[in-house]
Image (cartoon, rainbow, N blue to C red; front, side, top):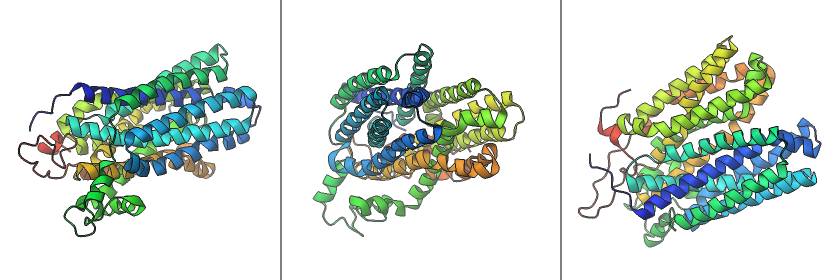
Length: 446
């Protein structure tokens, strides 16, 4: 196994910029979540009406996620990150103004802008992060997502402190908007132009790369080009990518379920106080952050298939204890297992999606899996609320347990495909070598 290439100054700035802005997005999201009660009080609306206001975030997020991959392919990741950052900052400013003026429609519109910016930027960030991994030959995406998790911890702590001193929510969110603007400007300047756009350029230079062509995306799309809507759907003809998509669905669902329901699960399901429920969620966020920052060496040593299989099983144990334990203390402690187990699923599966394809085709595959993961993260967990109305929230979480068990059974799909040989003397990374393959260079340990 050859040593990974050294990092030059431009690549170092590229990676640092991605880390910084993911940290900033985590802070901004947690800042909003922490101040939700204050916004509701400022608007003087019922919980049901507040739910309608919050729906703006879901609408914006899904819209951003669904169009981001196509925009990256057309304009490149840097342009999409710039657009996403602009919408995110505008959304924070509109939310702050809506809360200060006590206008529910303003907060709804701000959340829609905020969600659209998050959705656009995060898919583009996954594509950029996968490109950095291909350049460096070592894991980047787990730490990238770890920066987001760290940002949520920082934002939540700051939000709790500012709530305690009754700091105006409008000024709080406006301050966060200024900080995100600064991070966004530096990030856009540091990220190279054209990441993800080379695919469309390659298709234009190879007009014969349709079905059956040797220059088509044979492994990702069954021999069809990956441009446009049909191309985005065509990548799912690859059986390995379908299995990777199923894994990311399960792991993202497990993470999103904790984000949406964990405090209420502890309060209603285990009879804890609201404060204890919030602290339990904080414990989950810290576990997620720890798992993502510590996961790189494990991936290098054991490989993605073994790590994600173990992660899914650890998360399943944590979820099972939360569901079936009669002790609130044990259930609260089990949240650590839930967070550690769920931490690596999303970034590792996204990274694996780009393997086995040409670098110019990898963005379509990464975008497809990212979209599936974010859809599961945003849309799936709220559906548990309907089930909980009939069986209770603890019993509804059995769905998460079943999905994690299923994911553990199919992690062989995360093994790296056999790489093609790079051209002699080119210094290029051959297809299939875009992400560290050290785990598949050794026997699979699980």
